[in-house]
Image (spheres, rainbow, N blue to C red):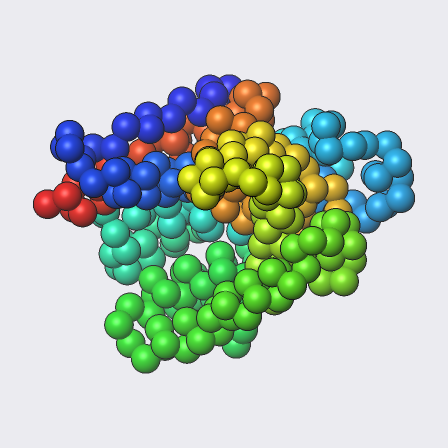
Length: 303
């Protein structure tokens, strides 16, 4: 399978604001990471034999892209996205095609992808999105996207945002747990893919990696050198952070996808193992869509 070949050069003209260029690259890395890592966790999602996992594996060897897959949740081939990841893919492609959220275009793309020819699992969010009905609850941020698209500018949009608007609380909780080993924190938070721990547990893993990176920096280092040292340490932690998310079992595709997205934005994709890129069936398509979207947004921002 084709590997991810990211074009990291923003489309903005030379002499652009470095902060804008950096933001464009961070967006590209995050968009490219979230779908890749989601696919990595699907093949082992739902395996709950924690003791055997922890005794048989370390963070240097993972349970990502198992082939044959061992997940009891879905009969999905290794390298395919989870149902939530498939929703993310549809949204990414629509955003790239329209250079923004065109509600009608996205609703049509959603209907087309999850229509009669779809051979995967349709979760509650997918079924609601197909029917155009408002959700009674939004368990994960990924589930909010079809409802945002279908509601457009109506009052239902406010309801959807309210249902998914717990990120600030999740972040504060994750910050309190940052120094704990992720296995300890996730045992407290839970292993499902629902709010609030759908965001709290992956944020805790990322903050834990940052905590470790900060602890590795010489205390006497000047501010700019310390920031650079932390950033450099984070770049080496990408695969470890994702594996920490996957190794805890449960709905680990959702958890690892958010870890991958945030780590990609913070540390780039240099730490993504080439074997993961080769194992992901949509590597080239995701890289192209993410690149188109980010280059287009850079042009708009520089106009």
